[in-house]
Length: 159
Image 1 (cartoon, one colour):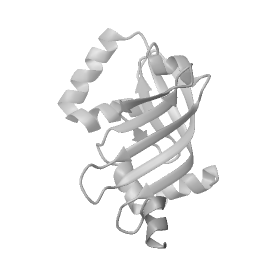
Image 2 (cartoon, rainbow, N blue to C red):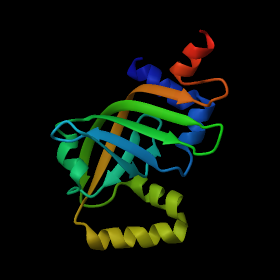
Image 3 (cartoon, rainbow, N blue to C red):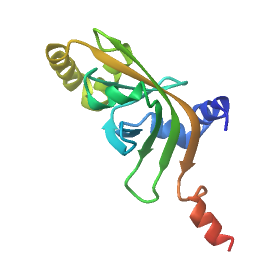
Image 4 (cartoon, rainbow, N blue to C red):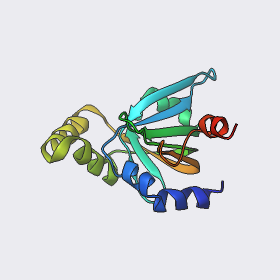
């Protein structure tokens, strides 16, 4: 899958757009210095090209993403039939003194207008900067357990 194919799938697939527009918390998987995997829940924003996430610049993941930018992200539901959007990609990080504009939208999406404003006020008082993590998707997989199943299920059905 090319970057363009991954992006096109995320821009046009109905289920992908539903999950990318949802208030579901994504999980970001990355590799620590010793090669062990790590997974953290993260707010996200889909720009149409990249998945954006934000974090304090001194958080553990910031210490390794520059050296190990290959990541995976999953956004999924917990009720049957499950809906999964998984992607792999390359992360890039930019640090600034203020949270980036899309992070303000994320705070409001996840916490509502009043909760988002309160969170952002606390963020400004707590941190001296903010990191913008941009993930460029290189591979996308969408499962809905209705027409798109995990490969093991498909292989078992076709014997």
